[in-house]
Length: 354
Image 1 (cartoon, helix red, strand yellow):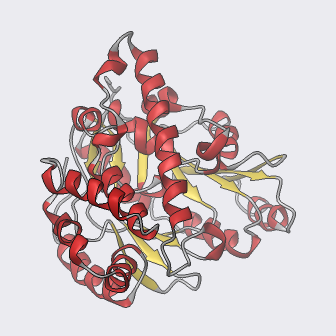
Image 2 (tube, helix red, strand yellow):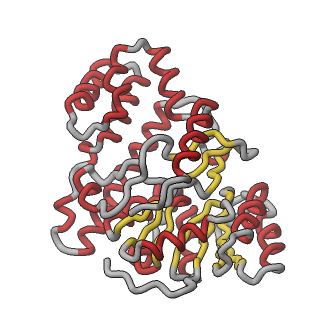
């Protein structure tokens, strides 16, 4: 996309969709209000909460005109983001879960990255994974580098999945990009995971600039499905179903941009990530034949990254050892927290990049 020159002090529109998070949303709002860059608006759509969320939000809106509350019946996270975006006016669009905690320099760092990289319509940064009580348990992504620059061709070649891109809380986009992506789908699994269109469609439109340090505490607890230490077959089945919906979203989006453009999008099964997930599902189901089939695809796939060495060798591990290693790699733990702190000390000394 061709982007217009950015104004000296762009308004940042922070979009928040809330449902029954009265326990957390006050901290989330305050973390946005505490930003060192003050030219922003915080638009919160309450998605039919049955707790006292609206009272908490109104207490902030009454004290600070930058906070605005919109109410609607329950329709899912995406529908809340759609209402917030419809009422926004900013040149920079940011998403925030209503239990996220923004570090004070988040907006300042994002605006600086956009200024330094005028051709980038998206800025990405890592996130701290934290417990319900904000104890840090790792960084996402932990060891891999966030993809930067133009990634549209890679997205097409890997079946629509751009590995190591952070979730929506770690992404901000220029308004020109957001206008092409909104409204978010409100039905099915994508309606419940409202940030996914930023992840899947943004890299098809624009280059990505990266800020190296984590700028958000991404709270993970029982209500958002990240608290369990187990990885179950139902978890994997749910994720694979969501990937199918995301791929269809990308296919239709590309076809809408230009007739025939969708032909360049490879099938979802070429994605190393999806192949790995199907292998994991087969192991969890004790389906040895399917596990061997998907393991062979992983072993021979030229696109499988080097860090997947564990997955290449895992076919030889007995079930209990395999399951322990999977929990260690996928879920929060103390080891990840230690690695994340070392990684952050290194990254914050590195300049942002495109």
